Image (cartoon, rainbow, N blue to C red; front, top):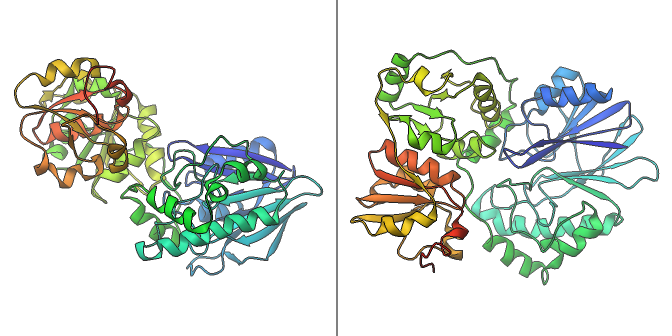
Length: 450
């Protein structure tokens, strides 16, 4: 039995292709299915089955499109009411994929209808595809369905983990979909995982707490804010997402860019955050093209707002486009590449300083200057700069009036989110300075923290 991992670090997720050198099962495919097909072609196997562990909250699935493309069978929880063709499976079912035996186990918790797939081949250790159930060191969060269901699902998550532990040998290999930076994961466990169930029993929060009630208290108290775009994912996955179009967006000239900015559309500059700070078109939003790009754009943008992408190269536009289709933003309204001098035209340009924490103390000596912390509530609670103003980045657009007048020195944990917040504040006319630095350097720079 062979398991090939297809990583999507931008969302903190993994897709898996498990095969017997002839037939293959794909578990939880992302929407850009060309990556999966390329892997199958590279190892010389035929994809005969595609399986979903659950209706995903953090991305649009490529399962339906992949199944139709390869002509295989599509496994989905039989208790879900879905309008497209699929093979409904329930706990206790078995499916043959070539020489592989796939056992279906109902593991509610992350969602009510969540499934785990246990794949066996002879005497080899089982491969266990746990989706959003048992993750490395932790479990999938349980508050994504509805607030009123959180405690019930948290208890179900605990029982599902213990059911798996009782059913399988310690050498079983655990292959979760979430948990690699995904906001679908929850409170962390006590150590690093080697991917075996035996190690998970020693470090995973599901097994190291003082019982079910303690687990519920710890997990629920550790749940943090979730990206706003999650609200749209289940609906898209329930209806069945259509294939994506990754062809280049229509080119946009400087005159049209100015019109779009004036209309209030999102014109997003993908350049590195310090490059944006030093020189950008007025009215644009700066979101550096890095792993968290789509997560934070999807979290902040008013849903269905037109997006135009600006970049130095066409390859960067293509990468941003690929990241966006995974969260249901299918076609940019347009794009421009070649760098700021190519697409700025006569449009007004702006800049603001980018500094380290070592420079902040001197800046605070100036009148009407304050630190603005845009981290989440849980990060703020663990420690923050004394007298800082706290406004989580994901609340910024609805709470712009809560930002004091004056010069805002904007920081987060590393500089990435602060750079987005600074661009949004600059767009709104606020005087800003980006603190492009690790928060852990604040105290060493002489700033009092609490």
